[in-house]
Image 1 (cartoon, helix red, strand yellow):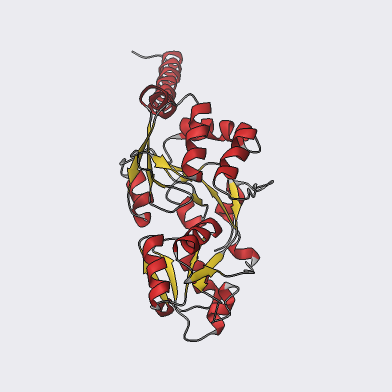
Image 2 (tube, rainbow, N blue to C red):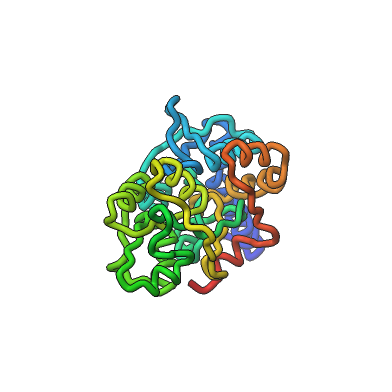
Length: 280
């Protein structure tokens, strides 16, 4: 017969075991240190792309590798995929983390982001001379026949809709290369992506295209990016946040930004919690 005291001890011991099971279940950091991690990304120069050696290269890739080294993770294995497949692939276990992306409420419902790595404003690729006079998302909305190429599933697709550009005047594509070709061919008047990506496309455009300058980004379209993790990988994400604090503003971080000719925009006091709770 189990006495009341015995029952209490049994319950307490059972609770302790349950707590231990939860703790043991999240061995994501230990696994990463022992086996390395797989890194999902889509080609988006200069931020991330598959290098000639078959490894992930680019500004974001080098930052991720540098931060994970600080965490004691020695190997970061590349997994190339389409942008729209990154979050589904992460949650399906195809890779352990995905390339830094904008922290958006809809994404926060599916994954857990690390703390912000950078602040990112908008940009547009346009034909040489900017004949449609596009200097903001709102300018694209005012011109009733302007068509804008976007990367399918990227935040810019939503920002254009919010600015007043109807869905039938956006051209969703899979990667920056397709976006560049679409603007050069005239099937779109502009392409909306991050400043570094737009600059990279302009450099590859052979004088036919340029970055819209100046470009004004409304406050609601200013974004903050970080690495998404599976919600269950708590220890891996927490270790990332700890290493990120040491990395931001370091000489190593400055050297990586300088290598790719991108001016760093640090997140200041912005937090992932604030970004996840903002109204879309």
